[in-house]
Length: 594
Image (cartoon, rainbow, N blue to C red; front, top):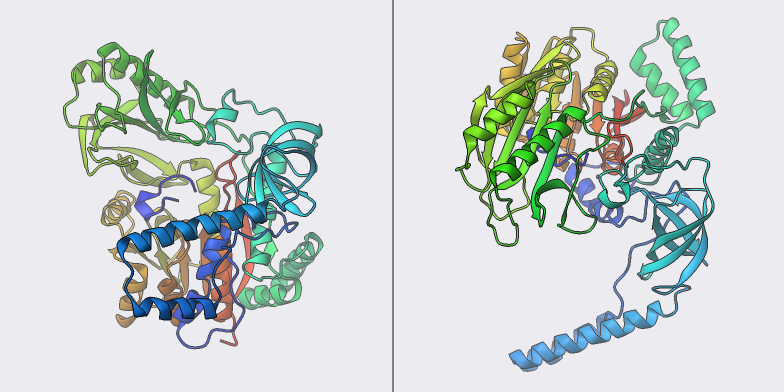
């Protein structure tokens, strides 16, 4: 996710080798380091239609040259001036070589071209080619013919601006947001929601095949697998063995993306940066590619109540002459306005993030908020005096009301504090967690370990269906919240511990605690390599992987596959409609041969 998952350590993984694991898994994980860099190149997510490489370094000396120059330098140390001149000459030489290479490209900066868009990368940019040269075009959709202007070129790919659409995709719609082109919070509002869901599933399929080297069942094979699954289940065969058998025959089943019936106004949290213009205090979003704050009164993916509170706070701030924080000078008071809304209970929390403890006219501010927005149950202040773009500081205090608000996911109640993580789309969170419980296959007799447990959201869901659940999380404050939530729901069959999963889980094993099921819900960077080693050593019957990044998911699945596990089913879930982000829940079984 794009959203901070501080409770889970989430700010919320690329081509793995297929050599079977031998001995220590660290050797395996070291082999896939290059894949993290490859995925970040923006080249690899184009519907299996494109494979554009990343820019390589040019003009390097060969080994003999390098050795000869090294011998020469041993004879006499260079002076500082000589080193500086040598470095400048080398940089100029490299620039010259680079420019010479780019002059051979089929297009140059500022050229215009008409191209066919044949895919879309993981950033939501259309992908086209000019004489084999790849161009990324924000705003273009697969199947379109467009006229573009080249903005930037590299050795093997470039970026272009969409000028005209000669032939439009049937999936194109008019983005309903008036500031869509300026904002950047949503990337694919110009694509129909049905097409968004299809693209997100295909993106998951692509990375599983390209990065994870997994065989994915076609739609027809998936239907056959479902029918076989039902028939074999009726015959009384073991469900795990049956699923692994079907995987071997048909491949990994990737289901259609689970979307929302109403994919707007789904966010329960707003984090709005505050700035100042000639007209006074403003708050909204950063303009694309800048730190300039553009004022905004409504966001179509935010709950309307969040918009209302933010607007009221700005209005009161202007009236009281509150200064906005200036990140260049480090001066000014109000940095961010954070609003949290509990969808089930209707309670709201307002957090004023300030550059200092003193708030002028605090009583007037609080009184006006309480008068105009009666649903606000908590008004807090977070103090952040650091020169940083991190939103929250270390100190939080209550200005009025409670220190938490309460909400439900399913029938589990959660206390939400100013800094605790809570999923921003509660409707789809229930869908995601219900699928996690389903894939865990619990009968009430199992022991489950929840790695990256955060404030215990998944753990408490699992505890309703398991004999015992153990949750581990490296963030102490999150574990404090998890324990409080367990008490709040009177659940005694769940235990939480602070620490790194790869350290705590082996310690549990030494105490005689072994897991039938391990659930992982890591940040975007994926599972820590040592955690994957720990899973392979503990050998649970099944692993359920909840992913917020398909690329690192695929990388980690390859490691588990090589360690004796079989990926069987993948369920994409659309937690963030109109953005390029997609979550997925995966069930993985241990192969009986291992």
